[in-house]
Image (tube, rainbow, N blue to C red; front, side):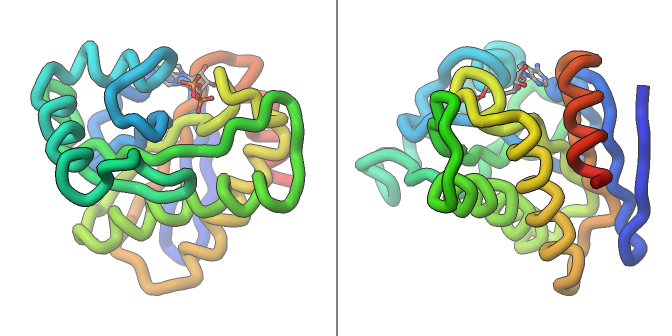
Length: 183
Ligand code: ADP
């Protein structure tokens, strides 16, 4: 299942799928600040991508991010055995069912900075999961509207990206995302 909208020559695709199977320049990982792997999409990316991803994450922890990657920031590594070329790791906020301006800004930054990083590397395509909508329990409708804001702001700036795919893991999440995103 798939839907698409075109904004200023950039195709925004919303689909159901497993992000580890996406054949794009970069997939985004909803990581945690330790960068050492975890559950959900993070676990799937590390287990299918292999040890090279973790090795690069460890180097980043030893050098620029000894305290861990702050919420809202993004870093890039190899994608190891995955079909994509890179993994962009970002950290969304932990909402635990709450929502406020601060959480919204942190989540916005996670989406926006992931897109900026792809642009900085001159990438053409990116796939993004439902960041913070799983274990971090941000309200799913709010995540979708925040993703939309970040994408629209990003596309207004000059960008190398031809295609931005949002990859949702279930039909239910897909429906929630589409409804809020297209509002
Ligand atoms: P967070 O901790 O940021 O909430 P999670 O990984 O727990 O991250 O969940 C984020 C979203 O990713 C959830 O909607 C979850 O269903 C989804 N997800 C889990 N595995 C995959 C996968 N392989 N591909 C795409 N989405 C996935």
